[in-house]
Length: 145
Image (cartoon, rainbow, N blue to C red; front, side):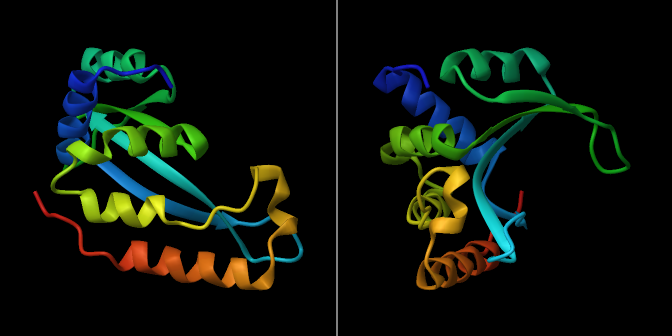
């Protein structure tokens, strides 16, 4: 992630507070020891591609993809950032967050264990805490637009 000025952090926080999803997602583990693996995820969506590209240049990480038009949404674009880069962004903007600060704090408290290749080294207690924390994040009441 790029070094951001305080003004850039505040701008990014305002954008994320209103146009983003902050979460921890689970996926089927390849390990025979655990049913699930987890990754923290920041998704910023906007109908204006140049806005999403600007945000990508601002933070210096993430991937942009197009979201197809549906009955509910117009075609749009999203910037997805995960793992350590996601955590770095969330820690940088935390002081400026308002509406999504509680979910941001839950995601920052999620107990990640080592690097993604070290999933087999977590203990049963660490895995149980990950599952419990993920459930709290998923059940957290979200703001409706």
